[in-house]
Length: 377
Image 1: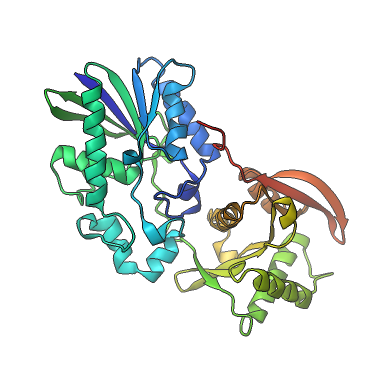
Image 2 (image 1 turned 90 degrees about the vertical axis):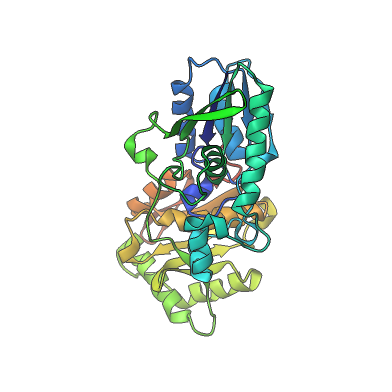
């Protein structure tokens, strides 16, 4: 009899930033590190003989829970990867929802019929995942193994093993990050003993994000959007400094036009559905020679603040600059803007230095874009 534990990966950037992941190989998050540690503590006394993992870094990092400090071999297998979602790879959820709502609904609720040109189907994933599961089981008779993989991959595996439709999300829900399925393999048959067991996490960590306020992008129109851009910058300035002393809206708008000329995707408005929600302005030319990326402005309208949405804008900057090969991400934040300072520290920024501004000190802050799991795991 073979004991098999199938585990969804720790929280990764796609989960945090609300981006489609698939084969996109983003980093893990600080919460993901904590989840890995709790997973390791839970299984500390289980004598694993082998660990198998998807070759994507979020799954390989999760495998550390079973290999670190143990003489246990780790094997990577591309068949354990998440679904390849083709043109949706790395795309914000809300962009996919807005542009192709019926298709995205099928992705969530009708996987039997989901088809996106350039992407895998759920049946494609099911075929390769079940093949990998069976090969692993047959190669390890009488042993205990762990498999670290991905949410849709696990659903495809388990629905096949249980003989139920892919759309049966009540029996096989989307797993929490580090949720565990426990299987046994004997006489050529699998028995499922547990599904999405995340007892090593607290209730908040077990929850799957359901916030309907996923933000979509709209490219700025230089001929139409000047006043809205300046209004956003003025509100951000007032929030940081208390008044508009020293604010020059025209100068900031001219700088934004330069950013757009350098990169048409560098300045964008964000919406929640039809509702205007904020602005992200990136200066992709500044310090490019030093592999540095700059955020000029990250802004949410007052009604969208305090809802945990700012990280979605930050995620866009991280994804953009990592694709450009930048090493670090920088920005400036007024010392009096305690909420902004706290937000940036929470998501990995450290203060490098300060300069004196018209309203007090302004901090230069930096985030390492190499990430947590950039080491070979």
